[in-house]
Image 1 (cartoon, rainbow, N blue to C red):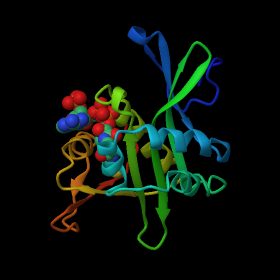
Image 2 (cartoon, helix red, strand yellow):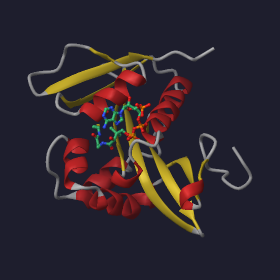
Image 3 (cartoon, protein in one colour):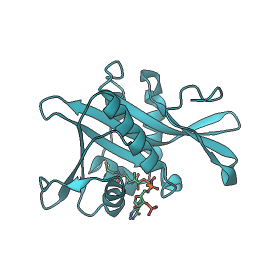
Length: 180
Ligand SMILES: CC(C)(COP(=O)(O)OP(=O)(O)OC[C@H]1O[C@@H](n2cnc3c(N)ncnc32)[C@H](O)[C@@H]1OP(=O)(O)O)[C@@H](O)C(=O)NCCC(=O)NCCS
């Protein structure tokens, strides 16, 4: 992608007001501790939305997210803020392909201080591009009916309600196709 950011999956974004750069990259098995710290630092509200409920075992969750990084159809992308030689995870999206259902399932979060800056949409786009490259045709996710930000993000990214949710949750899906 660039000589400075060889592991970036899309062009890094400069945050002039914070004098840093946000880079979207693929997570590896060695990132478990950083991901656990990231989940711990999310506000309780964002964390509850991310996991659709309370989770106390965040180190275990982080390890589970990164357990199958050797399989191309299970991957995690990070948005990482880089400033003065320091790297901090400020967003993550996890993707896992369900061969029986023939679609990829995803979940996503962005650190509270970095929300509504476009990083959720950028990670979603990068994830879709990776899924298309893998030959996957459908991507789906589930969120609480009350989660306005996720529903707004999904709508903007072209997802529709499949009607498969229940009174508490909404199931969203999108057919994947390469943009011309
Ligand atoms: C959902 C979430 C990932 C969105 O990430 P984000 O980086 O803030 O989103 P973006 O800045 O890329 O926003 C893209 C679009 O999403 C929609 N959106 C984002 N936040 C919104 C909000 N609070 N209310 C309504 N729509 C919202 C808007 O359409 C927005 O486009 P716009 O800014 O041009 O209006 C983030 O709010 C988050 O981490 N929430 C907590 C965890 C969670 O709910 N995860 C989903 C369950 S898997």
